[in-house]
Amino acid sequence: MSIFDLVLNISPSFHRQCSIRIEGEATGLATFEALQTGLLPRITHSLPVESEQMATLHRRSSAMLMEWDEQWNQLGLDGISINGVFGSSSSKPQLFSLWSPKEGCAAHTMLAAVFECLPFDRCSGPAGELLEIVRSYLDLQPPVSIINYKPTHLRLAPWVHANDACEVESHLRMLADDGDLIVDASGMERFCGALTQLLPVEHLLKRRGEVRWIVRSEFSNALIQAGVAQSMIEIVPALPISRKGEPIVLGGIFVGSSELISFAKAGERMQLVRSFRKEYSLTIEQASKAAAELMEIVACHPMH
Image (cartoon, rainbow, N blue to C red; front, side, top):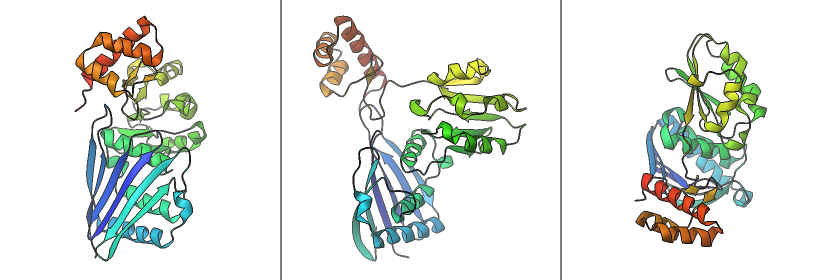
């Protein structure tokens, strides 16, 4: 079989850039990478790719290029941009660009094969979380995933919605009632709405097995009000860093200025206060608090 090399440079509208490279012959290697972005460290994760997956990916990549449609690279406002290179020993490298390809087209089918090489249950930690987000942009992330850890994890997707409640419940009811379960909603975006409208909390409370919860702080109160014991809820700490690596101060100011960050790293507090007041029209009290928060963030998350 010819040598295969596919590189995708991925730029989601509201999240950090990343890339996927799959290379090999009969079998291969899939590598996911996100370079350091602001205060976010570099991420890299690699998995072997079996021969059947490589053959499928090669076939779908070739089909996409043969069926190429210029509409696939028409830019929009919100979505995901993908610049790719497909090469093999039997042909010259071919460049292509995609913008939020829709399900059913050859480009989307090719991308589905790419992400089958990086399944969620084999991509944990920061790499798994970012891959989950990228899949969500492409409608390749199901609303809920059952992961066969011990105990079983029911993982909710970043953009799961109340409209997905029936699908979530059907997955839940397929699980043995006496098994322990962890409901992991730590990746849910804030705009998804109330967790208690999405999950059958009453049913979960009646399970014979123990049910624990991993959630963001904004979802915990509703769970407690619905009858979940606080001791069964693990709160995921919210990092004061944006999805693109910018420090966040005063609960909502995204600090993208390299000058402000330089002052914070150097410990120049007074200069930092003056710069905050000038750039964001803050009071002295607000600017002082912002300066203290930024200095603490930079100290805890040093940039290399």
